[in-house]
View (spheres, rainbow, N blue to C red):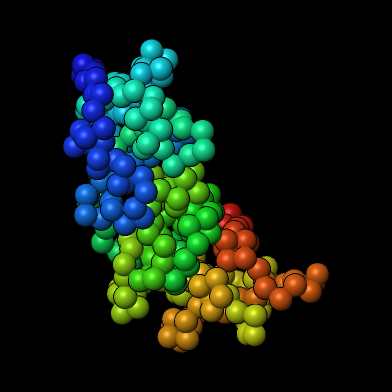
Length: 258
């Protein structure tokens, strides 16, 4: 375990970077690393066997910090509680966080069970879909241009640790999906059978579209299978994250039965 470094200046280079990472949704792309805070996300990092480059803790939390946090980090920084509050995106600052390097291997995996995000813009929706993908065995998520930044602070918090078990690729153009070697399944309120009645292919790629506009016509034209979600209550449409959970769960049930 490395020796902790005590930092008291808010002008410290690392703290300046962390303030930007915690507030700017796309700062991680230039920095090549991202920031997570709180026991839940830090524990999820370690559960997946990832090694944080820096552990950052507040002075009041340092004596209480789990030893595995300190053992896992390459470097340990201890800062005053007031400075930690400046880094936090939470109403009640968690007093502990990790800095991690972005994954290096972000090449599309042609045969993987996949979720495609087509301009899904709400961070909460994106994070929720990532959680459903992980829960139901879809290990690859592909984000087309216009989708909320996958490693932004809000998406990381909404994902609740799902990021660390998924293969994530973002900033893709529609033509990049040519590399996929699995059938594309799209939800539609106008065509296709009810999702629970379909003989869903596995592996496959489910496409989830923009909150207002849905899946683009161009992506719809690539679909091999169309699925409808029955809504006997008569609502016009479902939230995209709710629709994703239903569809991915249906796929997982088909897999379990095979």
